[in-house]
Image 1 (cartoon, rainbow, N blue to C red):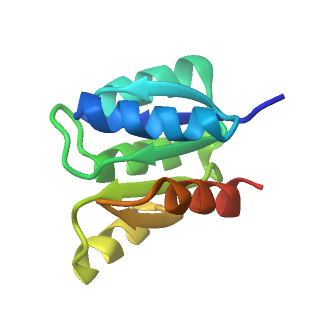
Image 2: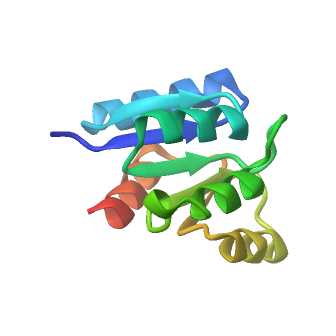
Length: 121
């Protein structure tokens, strides 16, 4: 059975690109438009991994990570930030919130799949 990955990004084209790349690699994808959408879908249907943008409306990636980590069933789910932010303080903030890893946009499909395989298997 393939692993289910939740992607949260307010950019439809970015969600499409991430989804296409990971579906090609054999993963099931659930898309969310922002943090609140992701949290609702995650608690309703679960996932094996979460990939989230940092800057989103309604609920940003850091708040999403904090709320996901507060739920016992998702305490240890791999969470990767996928964002244009590359500053050290932002990465530290992500780590403090509970992010497992960090990918800076733009990225290559190989880079994305490599990180997913590393944290999910």
